[in-house]
Length: 148
Ligand SMILES: [Zn+2]
Image (cartoon, rainbow, N blue to C red; front, side):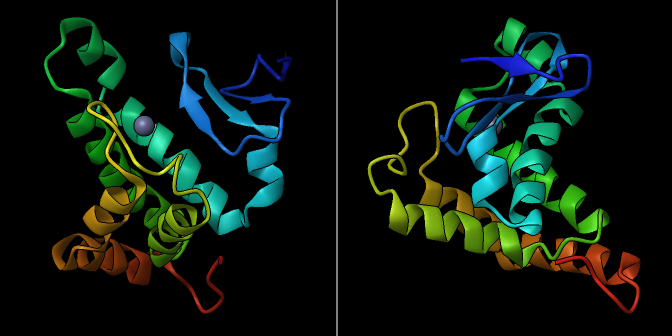
């Protein structure tokens, strides 16, 4: 694995894997494959989720074990949904992305005691009160030509 652009907040790792994660020093790592395989809106959902971890200070909380991993993951998806809506990306893209990944990569999507399943992620974002909140933000910030 090779990293470049490490002086920026987002580092791109070579490889075809579609994944991203927050590393130490708050660098966000994103596989090159993620950027190539996904649409702009889908990439926004992935990056917004990682930013959600930063906004919720999960790296700090991890050190103190204040929240369990599954709860932190779902919280980051929720924050990420609001962030991508704020950036004028349709929040429905995130739900569709996770549903598609769940169907396309069932083994990857199962989840474990630390990670919610991909279907659980999609369902948590599709909850009416969550999606309505994101759509309200999206409609407020979206001019005539939304970013999709
Ligand atoms: Zn996460």
